[in-house]
Length: 239
Image (tube, rainbow, N blue to C red):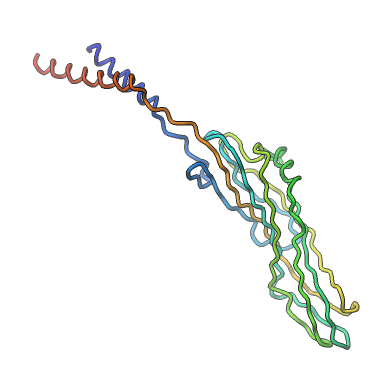
């Protein structure tokens, strides 16, 4: 085989190494133009909640994570069957407060240490809803449906949200909920059934390594090699 043919093969191989495809993104996330997003939620769960929820981690092999934003939203739902009743002999005006404290912690996952640091700084206050009523003697009124929310944002540390290969991590969610009544002279009955939900809306921003482009010298080498292949074939055809 001619020397030029070997040269051509070397040039083609060099080009194939220089231009390489970027690694595939974590399948659990939707990644476009340097940003990966996903929303995960626990779903409506009867209080008191004591449950785990998975969320997707950023795959650090696809690029360098530059920022993360996790919008955490807690929702308390008073069901449509909930009601209040005035047991007094006269009309009463009163206020009913329904609230739940959501506690979120990391389990023994790949980033649990850093994630607990992040969750410890999460300013997610009580999820609270108020309703005021004026009800006649012996009357009742519906309290639900009623869905107050509270939200907060996690932004650091980045180590809490990434690992080589991506995958999932787990958080544990629990609630303590309660009802309080102001007014009514102790004559108000509140029968309130609730569910809770918690969601993570995640955005990972990242940069990817620049894909190499063949230098002019490499292109010239490739051209020479291809020309050599053509010359060798023409020479062989004449023999």
